[in-house]
Image (tube, rainbow, N blue to C red; front, side, top):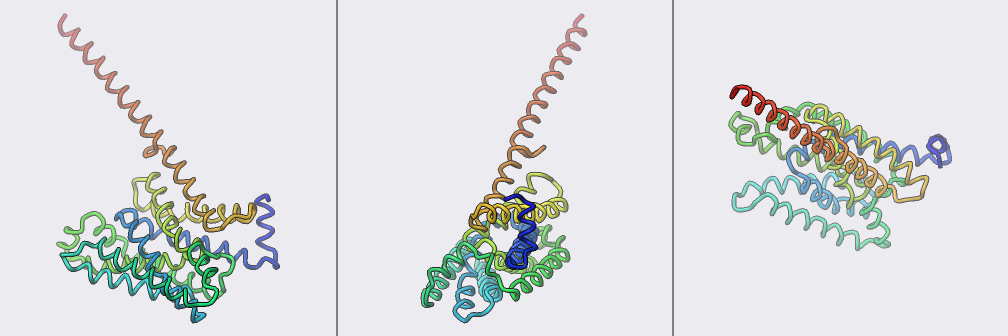
Length: 306
């Protein structure tokens, strides 16, 4: 299938689910791309993975009650994030230990809840790996509103988040509410994960949160540029991934993630400054410069001796 045929399918009234799938995939990628920049800067990839497990009981309860999966996941994720933030204040426990306890427990609770529902195996697969073609309009609106609020919050708190990322103790000394900012970021990561679960599933959502941001990190040293590149990369990968999955009949979530991973690997190799080849060329130029400087120094020494 050519890309033109894919575009025609997007406008086909008989395939009304396809443009909705594209829209929610792109929106999720943009949201995760922006939030993912702060996740990558603060080394919070593990938290993103843990949040994906934490939302599972909310998804399970929403499924059993036939409610909104997005809202159910948000409630469960936010409650768990608040519990982690509170329990992490105990100096005897490190944050990663608290995260491991609560998020693993939440995931187990979700499995127990959904196992009580008839035909749960198919639903479990949908939760774990995504079901982008069966998204109701109500969830589409929730994702759009939640995404807009998240992006607004990132814009308003950008400087504070960066200050905490660079030096927590200095930020605390200057009067910034570090705990409140941590809690806010946890909640934002939770919402970003929830709005993306239906796109690529519970298992792969971490890739959508981290991979575009990590790719952008290799391309620039400026945070502002990185936060523009990451959602752009994520959105393009979502479009290409959906096109490939539709034309070759592949799982949508897995194809989007593989597309993003391929872009990351190419960037890791070819990025002008921070890619493997770029660093190799820089080392070669540095060696050549040192060699030339050494030769000039030898000439000056020889002429001085004469």
